[in-house]
Image (cartoon, rainbow over all chains, first blue to last red; front, side):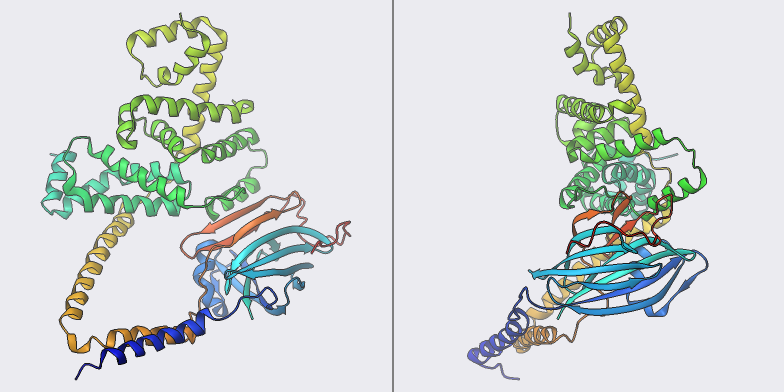
Length: 156
Length: 184
Length: 175
């Protein structure tokens, strides 16, 4: 096979790089973008050895971070929230999780999160999370175990 | 007859893996304990301890026997641990080692409601105060208190003089005493 | 004759057995005759015992899994190096296919940008927690290094008041 000319090779390489740059780097980050918040509500306990297959994508996270024998997905809920908007998510046991995206800069989503028991605040936190990643709230007791809330944030 | 550390090192330098395995067997516990004292996280300590022996393996040919093998090994371990500490960002919140500690505490509370609160508080405050020390001050405290190493050995490990070891220990102990005076 | 301040500077080294004979004797004589320095020595002893007790790991680690971890590192690094050397030799030995290298790299970049290789599992970077207010409850912040997961653990109070109590709060959410 003959080697193509230098000019052709350079044009080929440049066009690939330009496509990559346009597709990946060109997307503008704006503070006004909506953020999709997804909450996986999980019951963790030591009653028996059981792992809900729906939790497969985060199995390693759960088992490495927490030391329970059983994990069961109770519910999954998503909301698209505008910046500065509030989203309420019902949490078993009469609790509510309120999430408010603040802004999105440098691939980091700033969130305010509150866990309430009835009307009483239990925990407030502000944090920054990389786009399309999650963090975990855990500890509130429920049935014979504890609740584990896996909170995902994705810019839309 | 059991071979000395230096004899094992010489065998390692000739490529004998069994000799290196014997050295790991002799010192893995000590290295792990020292590193755990510095990092306070079991997973990190395991990583750093294994990395220590890996680097020792890579550098074994450069070991000439000027210092004892274990001070050479501890030097590698402490340097990696100090680098690890510097890389890790700490927030103002108290970190827990891992979930094991959380669970142990919960079980302690459940099993023994009348446990010695004072001793528990002292331990927590002490660990927190040790964590607040700089990596270099933490290192001298751990090496002296856990391993009982001489100032000379500690100086060899940290690459400083005995006088520096003495003054760092004095400073570190003074800081800890200040924070824990009510408990001592 | 050394002052109490000078003695206190030397107390730690004296307890550690690191002073020369003459200096050690001087410190010992002073401590025996000075209640303040004697108390200081008692506190130092207690501190040393407490530090050791706090730092000592109760659980020894098993050798076999530890050794496997070390061995794996040694073997991984060896094979990585060998593979890389083979690749370099191969790349420089086939000039006719040199054009394919930038093409493959470019294609990979395009495919990545189009999301073909997006992972199902999360990237799991640590969350940067800026503030936590648990309203007087105990809370722990945990970081799991392997999956890079951040866990905020809310402890249960003695009264078990994490369950909804139905009480109304004076505070409304401050978002």
